[in-house]
Image (tube, rainbow, N blue to C red; front, side, top):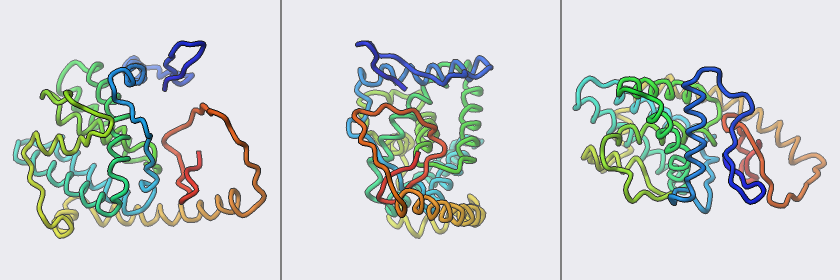
Length: 265
């Protein structure tokens, strides 16, 4: 992240940098992108709130979208690649129908963190095959996280940018750009009129039942955690500190949505 200190902007990274040179360079380059993000007009001015990504069906359809993207990355033919990309966009569109208020917020997060992730890996890899392997590795790491509220955009933005790579796609970007729509345009994908019926017909290809069962078990654990947090932060005695211009570091992988109260860090 970046911060202002003594009239100068600084990039901050974690105290203990990765030991291997690739991950170390990739992390620093990711943060250096944030250093110039304001200057190139790609920092969202109004922020984003993706608490819906803690909800069961948002996570299910995000995972289906990712599974389809993964199939597109590993596809052997252009037809298979386009089919998988179409499925990813169908699951994405259906999720956004379930949570219509979240579309802009999702776009902003994917642009804010996905572009630095794409750029840093692009600069650190030497071949197209190596770049492809980094996308696959990022997909696996993203899939295994329990919390997506403040982490999904790192992979989703990276993955869609990967499919735009090699085209003149960086022109006219804004903090609100929908990278999925850019991919849809580049690959000339026409989404079906009946998104709901189509996703029902396609989701089993990507392991819907297994994803559903995993997410149902996770929801039950999260419901227990929510009840515990409610007792701790809402039902008991609460001390509220009014902070002026707080500047806080946090781990984006373990945030807990707390309903309309916000997010627990």
